[in-house]
Image 1 (cartoon, rainbow, N blue to C red):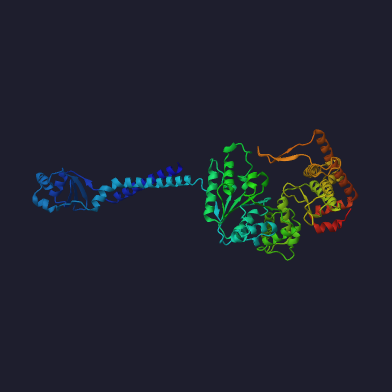
Image 2: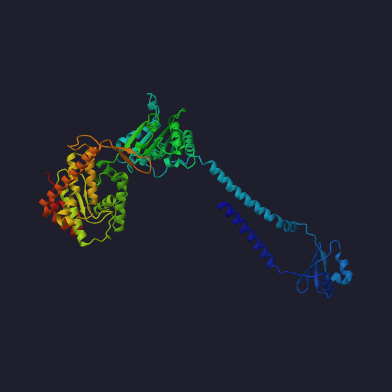
Length: 610
């Protein structure tokens, strides 16, 4: 409708412009005076006429003073006969230079036909333009079910290969074999091996699943079609299935080829969980994917690579052999892989000589590849903001805190009492963590507000951990309660603030996990409590199904309370015994606001076992 109105507006404006041009052309000429034949005869008798032009019934009289007159005669009458009847003599008529013109050339016909055909031509052009618009809309409507999958240009300048992907050794080996299947299929077919039909990349967000797929595209040297799972689904039923057919049809014409579907969980969720029944658009799309990957018709020469961070919600039919034959888990990088990833992202960044990528890797356990890239990028931005030529340790450490906790909030002004409470709170965490045997080393203590935290204590292990012992859980509980215990010890019961609220939540969750998930309670025994199920309705992430009685629930609550209270008592005992050290930490924090690991160790001594 908007396009139609636009076309009508263009037509109206064009007609107005033409009318204005015609009016302007007419206005440039001096308009002659229209008179009767008697006036023409009188002018001839007075010898005022220079010439008379006769065109059919129209007369144009040019007078000797340069003015012009126009007149008309009756059709079929001869002008000389009419003028003689009005008293004009033959001599006077001869002096008037009478001439007859008969326009039959192009100018005559152009002048006659232009007023008729000009509007017709303009209307024709308008309707042709509108027909073009409607035809384009029809073509788009007919192509509504076509896949929007794009083919990656493997010769593009920015080409990712496996050498550009740090770490993930096992994952790359699996995918290198897929590339080898495509390049030298006879190596495997001679032994009766068949090409895998699908590879599912599973892992947390930011671990590099899409990067691995781009590396496959760069290494394979075959057509690589990529599309997101959300691009299949539309509000119209059947569009997603049509796009799946179109995508696989295009890939079959290019075979051997690779299809990459990112975020496949958008269409691959378990069937029967939606509210649309069998006519649900997402389920129809999934059904078509299942048929295309391994249905009645053979599907040779195609390999489907998909990525998801929610493999638990995928339909079982999608995960069976013959569809996704291989499942590649892309896990969080370990310390060596983090160091290699940092090396790749630091290639185009000038670093100070004292920057150690190994130390940065130690400070970033749990970081994904995307987090590490963001870390060095934030450090480079901070360096440019400070007008420095190279990225230093200070900028990198500040960027670590920013990625973990958020930007500094130095504009958030605390009173002196609040600063003192924050200093003792963070000092309590740090001192308890430093003196407990199984707690991770304290890397940094600060009372500078970041994100929602008024201050923070950063503790991280020296090496990656894959298992956690009960002793570590209990020490972490005591560290979490260290801030609460310090505030209560220094300022008394009446001055306990809202500051430790997040610590109390954290301690409660640690205690619940130890009791309910890991069987670390002596009184309740080695078993788990509760089953977590995926909730598909009302936008909820998960829900817990209770598999224990009310009596057991009371025992769980009592055990959680006991663990948290024991942790608080341990923290109070440590802080009371080392009150002088706690005061020293708080004084330094009030003076400097931040203590790095080396300064903290110099202040409290080297960490020792209990």
